[in-house]
Image (cartoon, rainbow, N blue to C red; front, top):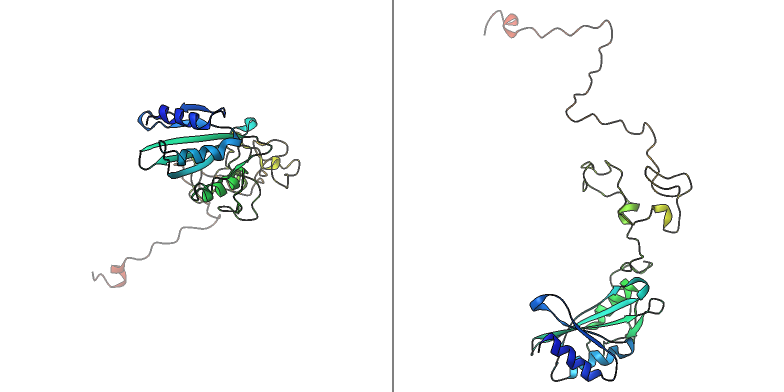
Length: 252
């Protein structure tokens, strides 16, 4: 079946539910994409598996996309190992109550994917029963794949190594620059930076304190020879060692 035929078949199976079929990009790798309301999510997944014309017996993956104020798109890719076609099922859940039915009873292989999506986006899958931490430590707070979550590890801790121009091989050769859109360390986290402790280029609250003057000597310019330490007054150069032939009576 072509992607258009797969989408039309799902529309017919889910009628009178309002669903929206389309076709993804990718030319010969294009997939039928069907948007369904959250209340019909489980029914759509079941129909894609049980219908003889679709026969999507293989669960490929499930994840989500953060659409900010519009909520979250939950996306699942299903595949027919016999008929060699696939379908992308998609539903949108609100940001203030991101919940959708679990499909573990239809595809047991979805259990891992729903746990990861719950952990990374904070989306609940009703009926799953075991949405336990999968990749993050139990004490971790927040959902790191939400767009408002600040991935500030490099901002909070110097990068151990020369990864950018100007950094020394031992690391810390140049004060790291925050990526665009990442707030200063004093603007996030439970312990704001004290006022007036801002470093170079930071706002009034932010950042690593500037290096105290005199803590580290300035580096010489590239190619410049270090200055020689002057010899104390009244000292002379040490005499050169006598030639061996003088000590041995001229014997070579």
